[in-house]
Length: 175
Image (cartoon, rainbow, N blue to C red; front, side, top):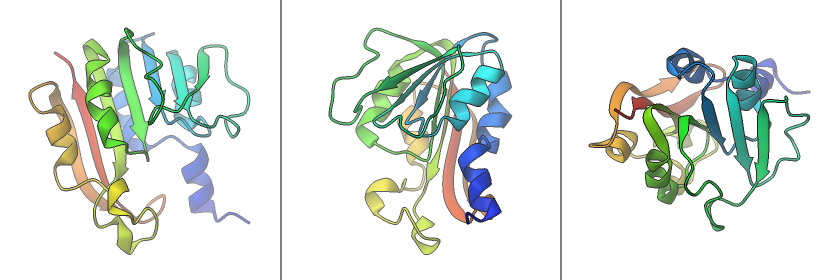
């Protein structure tokens, strides 16, 4: 049996995404990177956005709403599947591939929002991920957008819900 806190983590959208999604252009196109089971793609679709959802493995996604386009792609070692495209928002949670950060920032349309939340150094005391390759260093998300986006919100925090974790979160806008 899956404990309730872990079940919520798998199906409910991140509160960081919920907080910043109203700042996305209404009806805009959102890219959900490493979408996993689709908790954000499905929620954003319900909010009226057109969603592009990409992941290496879409087997856990289930049925996609009409306004969600699914793409199975290896964005770490394969070609970038959205070459020449721009988005009104890009959402990334619980995923880190550092070489992809500049590409994501460059895919934001003017006025677009970058919503990113993932594990930070210090998370190793709570469990996985514990490998430093998958944990952000202090200020790393700020550095990734410095001089390119205007930071609207940033946190480097330890949370207790939906499970204990060390996180960094950023919401930033392309001017």
